Amino acid sequence: MDLHQRQQFDFLLQTATERFVARLEERHRGTDAALAALRGDPSATTVAVHEFVAAIFADFLLDNADGSAFVLRSLPKRSIVAHRAAVTAAATVDEALAGLARGLFAEILLLKTLEALDQNAGYQAVGPAAT
Image 1 (tube, helix red, strand yellow):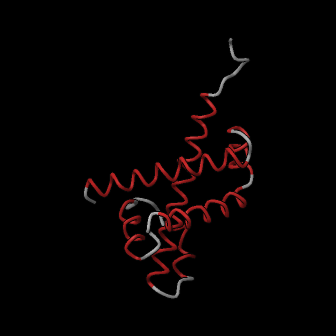
Image 2 (tube, rainbow, N blue to C red; image 1 turned 45 degrees about the vertical axis):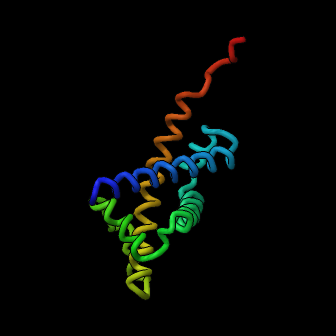
């Protein structure tokens, strides 16, 4: 992968992570509650992250075969074992690529989201603010 494409993917992942973290913190009214929700109910989180990834792919014009290939080229060492169902359920190559790309991106987005929420939780004020 060319360096400029790697930079574009890193920007995409960073932007998606920031947006997803903000959405979770707002929905759950804080970082700690967002972390608890993310770690506590994987099924609800899975639905939310897949809907979010579909929206991000649409926003960044990645909801096509070329966009899927771009994402897949950016994640060459990720395992596809957990995402085989998306490939086998697809009727076309385009659908298979899209399902695989969205699944892998969602997987890495969740990891980055956990990292970001852990960082945010570490930076929160512990006691009353000094005036």
